[in-house]
Image (tube, rainbow, N blue to C red; front, top):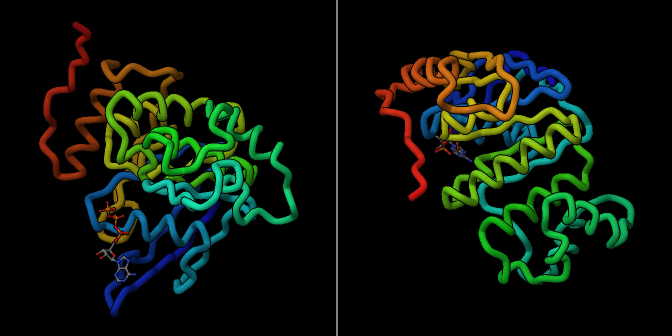
Length: 236
Ligand SMILES: Nc1ncnc2c1ncn2[C@@H]1O[C@H](COP(=O)(O)OP(=O)(O)OP(=O)(O)O)[C@@H](O)[C@H]1O
């Protein structure tokens, strides 16, 4: 994926302002930035949902996006939601395969309102996967989940990425999540990618790893947040 001199303005104000970005095939990139800095705007442009732009955006034809809110149609069963908008007339088996892949094989016929938050997010991921994307765009997909569900969902995304080999661009507010998952972490500020770090570590990663701790401090500093002590997870 290649973005050159991208500008997107609202009411004469450039939210994205001459931004450059490259994401390699199969690369996992996380995007951080203060609230309102333009992360979602960038993702919408990359997803092809917003074309009122200047500049050059080259993204794979096969791409898929999942948002923080799963956006399932309440009047369609889960498997039909997964196939929604897919070209051709894909059969139920296609949806079943994707739902199995995200651990939701037992909820194929469920109605969306009967799903938990984590399950709905999995359904949303399945809907992205049936598109067999070369680029998966994730806009805070774990933002609304409780801590434990969130960790499971993060592991799932890591697994899917490794299995599928697609590039991922993950928008998140969580510096630790970015460091645990991504090859590269970007900080958006002033309408551009203002800073980036490479996370040169095998997976699974440990947030207590000194390199990650160092990068965490660097990123929090860039985000203008004073680094709190790392959270200690205790099991009683
Ligand atoms: N359709 C729109 N019309 C006018 N302004 C918009 C529109 N979409 C986004 N903006 C503005 O663009 C700026 C960036 O918004 P965006 O949602 O991309 O930020 P964000 O970094 O994703 O924020 P958050 O982390 O809080 O989700 C904000 O000031 C927002 O008000």
